[in-house]
Length: 180
Image 1 (spheres, helix red, strand yellow):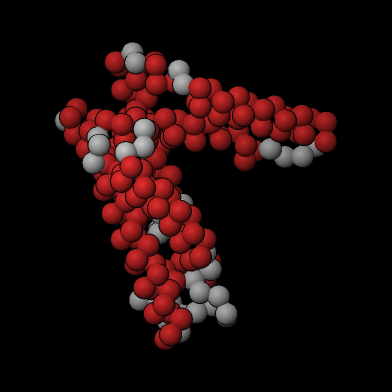
Image 2: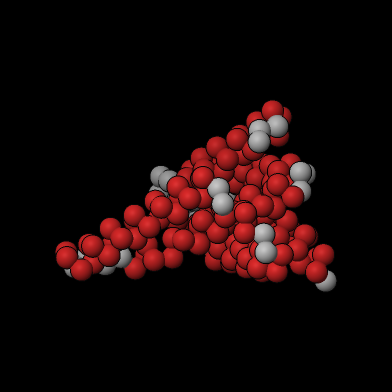
């Protein structure tokens, strides 16, 4: 059970994040939460605190602290709400946890690249199908002049493709040139 929990579940969830992000924000956020909880449990159990002792992690943490303190200033002196900035620290833990598992499993980047490319190809094909027929693969009609593809009426197909395509290109080149 421990081998499954420590190794395969986080690796599987990392590989599935591009596909899960097609469903909306809940499943990718939940999978990142599970990855982070398993990572933090591993860190506390093994007492390997050196993963947090990194210049980039320190820089990101200081940047988050600046954002948080500035939000507090805006809240108390200008009465501007800052509730959305409170939980940004979770992205620091996500960053460290995903980096940890990628460093532990060398083939994880290859599987992540394949997963990303499969999700992108599906979205692109679905978008073209919707462009030419007026409906996507699931029967959702085109919303005006903009394509929604698998996302329906949200019209975020281009945003999804641009973000994941840039990440997949980076992952592809990091695999080819063995970036550290």
